Length: 260
Image 1 (cartoon, one colour):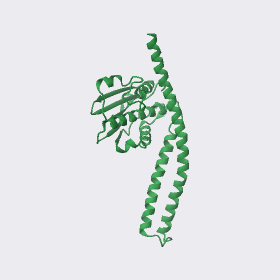
Image 2: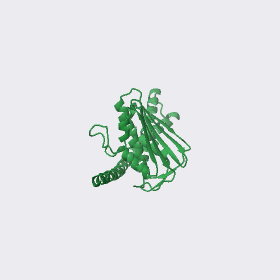
Image 3: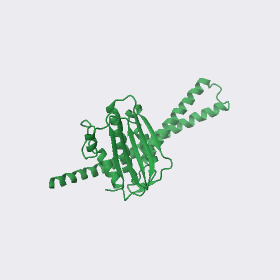
Image 4: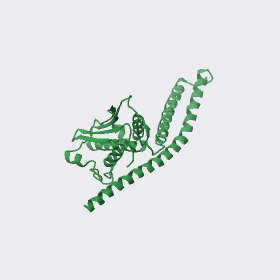
């Protein structure tokens, strides 16, 4: 009985350590991302302004030697500069997303969109059809944004890992949000390899993993469960081998504190 108590305490301490590590890591990434976005964003803005200035002069007849072909190239330069500008703004926005570790009113849809924008930089997502089915009327909830982002990221990483393992030509990850009585739900569905009954039974246990050494710690789902329960919610997993997995997270509108 004593050894089981010690193991339980060890698991709880490791989960807390992982939470703190994630928060410190996200803070460092946020600072770095904000700096990079600023340094890259300024030259991009200058390129956009110069191209628009040339286009304006050409439209007023001030560039008689600008051929139609060159004008098209300017359009292409402006298009790609605008894309880069959008990317830097997205990174900068994610960096500013969680200024506090205290419960606050959160727009879950916005949290999901921002997290997905960051995840798309993972090369695996180039071959995944990511479908966002978010309820536009979803009410705001009270919670800790950094922790709930951690849940979303873990679920998306697990889904991408399952799809990679399945090696299916048609890969889909769908994220849904919808209201329920006194709360909201998030679902992450994937068309990955799925889990058998035995794996599913242990999936949320601390340190349990089916991933190769070095690819997983076995803390992902147990950490998600700990965070969700600390927010007064619950998490359900359904899975079918060879077909995929559905993870459903339900959260109350008013979290009891978002802490463990």
